[in-house]
Image 1: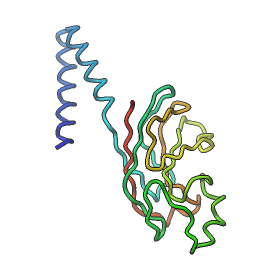
Image 2: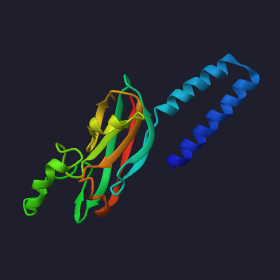
Image 3: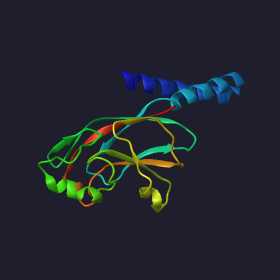
Image 4: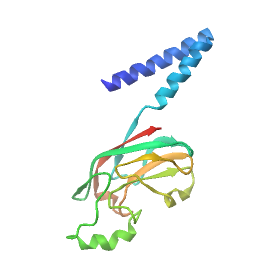
Length: 171
């Protein structure tokens, strides 16, 4: 139902733009710009796969703007199920606590949802953002594409399964 409403709204926006351009009507052009703003406020969703070293979202974020991110779902680290907030090292698996410093983001939980901004340079990995279950008023430090992944050891993505869903909305 919601998908049908979104498609209908996008079709309406396109038809409105065509009428505004053909008629060169300033009122229709103004109305179309308002519709475009409403469309940009819509929630965008993306599956973030546990097995992918990087999940490109295609979402460009800008400094100075605020975003709300919300993650839901469950993914699996070998045999340990986890939500997007991740999990602490299990006491029964003592070796995992010894490997914590080697995680891609050592201060975050195992399998926590991590984001970074790819602005086309190699330094993006130096400024990760712990998204977990979400961020309510996130302000990116620089412009670029939001890229996400599950926090794990860099060489152990082959044993990861499932995905979580990430929603982003500009505030």
